[in-house]
Image 1 (tube, rainbow, N blue to C red):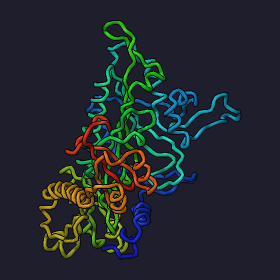
Image 2 (cartoon, rainbow, N blue to C red; image 1 turned 60 degrees about the vertical axis):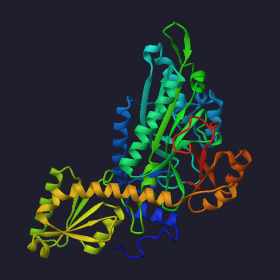
Image 3 (tube, helix red, strand yellow; image 1 turned 90 degrees about the vertical axis):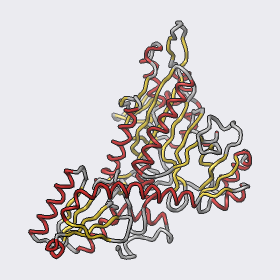
Image 4 (cartoon, helix red, strand yellow; image 1 turned 30 degrees about the vertical axis):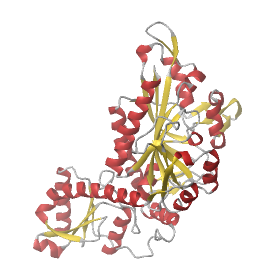
Length: 469
């Protein structure tokens, strides 16, 4: 077990604990420009696992990947007034290039609705071109005043999907499909993070959207993290960028568009949803290494056994890493615990003589002794069990720290350490402002059965209230 001094305990200072984990697990460093980050190989390997899993789901939903420029003419953003107003404080603008002042300032993309809208108008001619389903993996720039690695940075990585449809119903159905079959499925089955699904109240919507759906996860300190969002944009951007199609009847009709995205913020959410005082706990599905095979001593027979175990694990589709005996065994165990590798297999000379190894799960304290010959065949089932257990642990934490309340005053009190749920009818514009004054926000609106409503005007809605990142 890691010495108490290795990481700041969560209960003592959760933000400090988070910063300790990011640094000591070698996930990221602050970049040379304030608010930027350098993602280190281990952190980027986690992002690659996230990226590939989400990308497969996006393609299964019918969207195709493309790429659009980082530089956007300032006039593009001005075409949609609500959009530019919503992003103005975060914009980074280039005014000089090539040693000269530019005739028109260039914005570093905060998101790509405007530039993609320009090309949708060019590419869409008739109903036969619809739906147009696009996605891009890219970096975006939003000038962040209070940066925190992975959670809020001035430049971050993400995917952003953009689609155009003939009807509002088709656009709405596709946005819902992405939200449930891409984001929610990924969060549950890969990250092991249960979320509350719902829509944002009007004042929390994406700038220019007519509806925003969100996945809100609870972190280990009881705060909320917005994990992914899907936006119905109505005809706002189609009108601003002249995205018309010719109907079967030969009439010019405005398209309905959507956008949706998830970012490297998911890495921060992964840390905070599962981690403990010893560091990361990675669900096996997203872990770069699912097993670390540790040589207790640097001896030929031990090293040979470690290499053999790794090859057998590879044959069973298990990602593993062999840690040869360089330095203190206890220090190496501590380092791997901080990195959150799901399973540790310790191979020592005395155990080898008995034909056994020691196996430990990162989320449990106990160790097991397994026959050496059983390791490769038993590990996959152990990983599947750990994946499910981590989800159930996170779900139990979320449910135990979500309380039903009968007033905004009670909601504010509960939100100091968890989520409050109350009737949306109790939260008018004035009461929502009072929540915000206490650094508490309405995270989402739901139906009583937890399903996603079509709008905030439905009857008998409940809202999830919390402090957030």
